[in-house]
Image (cartoon, rainbow, N blue to C red):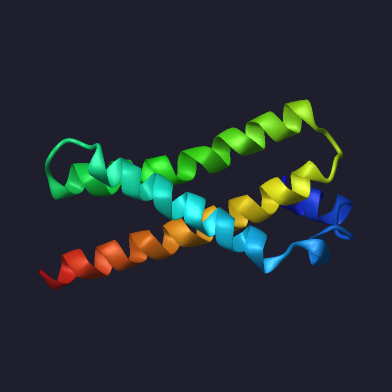
Amino acid sequence: MIAAIVLKQYNVIPDTQWKELALKSLLVVTAALAGWIFCFPGSNNRLTLSMITGMRNMSLSMGIAVTAFPGSPAMTTILAYSFVAGTGMLAYAYAARRTKSKT
């Protein structure tokens, strides 16, 4: 799905600005932080909910964009957000695992 979006909207990708990527990153961090703060006590619960909350926006935005805006440039924005969210949560999971294995 992501490859199809990239192939169809390749001309819009260079127009993505750093400010937009920074705001997308801030949204991912804010969502993960909200999941961490509002979760039940316990480090495993907090870690799991913060990751799920950070990824939920990506999944929801992909689903809405595919049904509501097929073939539009909005898909490229969603793709960029999905890349930022996926990469950010992957790095977060890796760091959390490294931290837990040291203790």
